[in-house]
Length: 307
Image 1 (cartoon, rainbow, N blue to C red):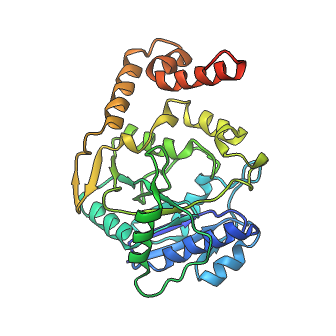
Image 2: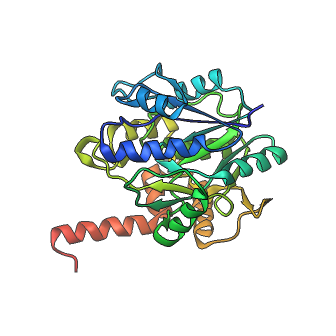
């Protein structure tokens, strides 16, 4: 039996750069052993890309009122058509290599209910990739030399057993909030949240946001606000890779190493529990003072009263 089904819902393939990086990403998935790949959605050019890359294409995904695919529908279709013990939702601009399969296998052998995730490397990629020879070593070298490790606030893949995430809200894909909720949900259900960053390199191909309204990133989009509401509020959408309960390092599952980021995240969670009786906005100001200090500096600068 195949180990893992990777599934995604790409953007339209109409923009030349988006077309290149999405084809690069999906082709990298097809080069992995023990993996089935599913493309979900009916965006322009998607059927042709799926045919060219030789992957299963399922166009009948449920959409929200804005025409954005729903993750709940994506996962239901992936389960229906994927006969594997593990499933992985992944962004369509992410290049992966063999280490993600090995990590999935190791964690699956040792843990029952879990979600596997990790930080990405951001890299400028503007040309179609050649998947020949030792392309994985070449990609690693380039990412280490020219790329940058993204902070642990974003998650671009989640790998989990078939019976996890059986019932999720109708989140819009490609908008903020749902990925944080995936981590929150795992913690709430007491599943193991495994940070695979030390053992798994994934590469995010940098791009702009011309496909979104005003060309701006999605953090302030109405669909992001709706995702946050469906998640249960800002607390549930604060969860990041820093909230992992385990780490995969050198093939072994261990406790995450102590970092300043994890320490302050622990302080924040503790304070949220202690200050549960206060309004959410007040708690936010108290537990995330650096964020509010940054906002105040911006306000003073705009009014001309700041330095």
